[in-house]
Amino acid sequence: MKLTKFSMGIGDRFGCQGKAQLAAFVKAKAMGVEITPVWNKSNREHLIVHTEPDSVRVEADEAVKSLEWTGDYRVDADHIGLKTVDRFIPGSDFFTIDVADFTGKAAAEADCQAFADRSAGYLGQMTIPGIDEPFAVTREALLAIAGKYLLAVQEAGRIYRHVEQAKGCGNFITEVSIDETDLPQSPMELFFILLAIAGEKIPVQTIAPKFSGRFNKGVDYVGDVARFEKEFNEDLAVLAFAIREFGLPADLKLSVHSGSDKFSIYEPIRRALRKHDAGLHVKTAGTTWLEELIGLAAAEGDGLQIAKEIYGKALGRFDELCGPYATVIDISPEKLPAVETVNQWDGSQFTGALRHDRRCPGYNPDFRQLLHVGFKVAAEMGPRYLQALKDNEAVIAANVTENLFDRHIQRIFTGI
Ligand SMILES: [Zn+2]
Image (tube, rainbow, N blue to C red; front, side, top):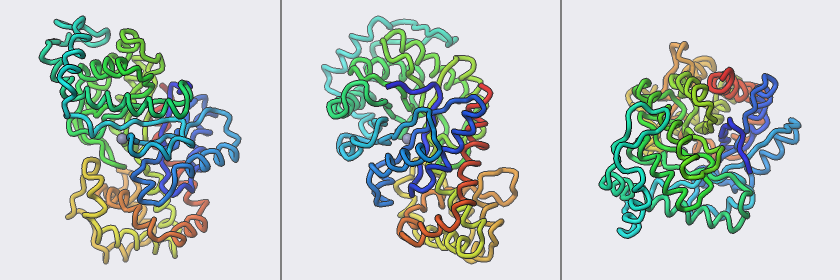
C-alpha cells in the first residue's frame, strides 16, 4: 500500500466533521494538489470520548461516499502500542507505532554491540549528500545511540509484526513515531535509528522524530526557526540517503506531529520540500474540535452558552485536563481570563480569543490551549453537546473547512 507524496492527518474528537474536513481536500484537489486525508484518533482520545476505533472508519467511509471522493484516504491507529493496537486492527490501514516510552532504556548488551558492528562501515567522517558538515561517527557514539533507541526500535518491530500477522504484508501504511520523547533526535541519530528499523525489517513509510523547539497543541511553533529549518533540511537529506543505503521504501517521508498551527515554520518546510523534492505527512493536533467551539460561539444563544460552560468547567479542572498533555502544551494560568469575564463576552469576543489569528488583538493562546485539552468536558455533556453540533452544523462546517484549507493546506502544500 502506497501513501501519496503529501498526506495530512486529521483528527475529529466527536466524529461529526468528516465531510467538512474532506471538503478542504476536495478544494485542494480542484487546484491540482493531491493530498491524502488520514483520519486519526489515538487510544487516549477514544478513552476520553468513549468511542471505538471502528467509528473512525465509519466516519471516513461516509464522508468519502457523500463527497464522492475518488482519491486515496486512510484511517490511522494513532500512537498505538502492543497493549492497545488490537481493537484498531479491523478498521485501520495506517498504524502509528509509538515507541517513545521505550526510548532511553537499554537493549541487551549483545544487541547493542551487534548494532555497532552492523554500523561499522560508517565509522569515521560520514558524509551525507546534501549536508555540509560530515558527522564524526565513533563506536562510542553508535553504542550511545543503541542505548537510547535500540530497545524502542525492537519494540516497533514486535508491534509491526503483530499487525502484519493480522492484516497481511503490504496491506497497511507503517509509521514509527518517537516524537513524544524528552529530547529531540539529531539528524545523525535519525540515520542510525533508520538503520535499526531496516534491521527489524519494518517497511517504514513515515517517521515522526522529535524536532527541536516546542510543538504545543493548536498553537504556533516555539523555538529557533532558523535552527529548525537547518535540522528539517538535514533530516530530509538523511531520509533520502537512508532509503538508498538500507533499501527502505522509496516513499519514506517525515511526519510532523502536532503540526497544525505551526505557522512560523510552514514557509521553511515548503522551501525544504521543494529543494529536496520530498513528501510530507502532517498530523494536525485534533483542532477540528476547536472549530466546533468557534462555530458554537459564533452562533450566539445556546451555542455560545455551551462554549462558555465548557471553558468554565475546564478552568476548574485545569490540572486534571492538562496533566496527560504536559509535554505538548504550555499554559500560563495567569493569562487565562476569569470565568466571570468570559461569561460577559459575546460570540465575537469568544471566537476572537479562541481562533488562531494573530492579527486579532483578543487572540489568547493560553485560552486556546486550555480549551484544546477541554474536550473531555464536552464529551461529558454527551447528547447535549452533540445536538448543539447538529443545530449549528452549517456554521461549524464552514469553520472546519476554512481552518484546514486556508490556514493549513494552502500554507503548507499548495505552490510547492
Ligand atoms: Zn504524536
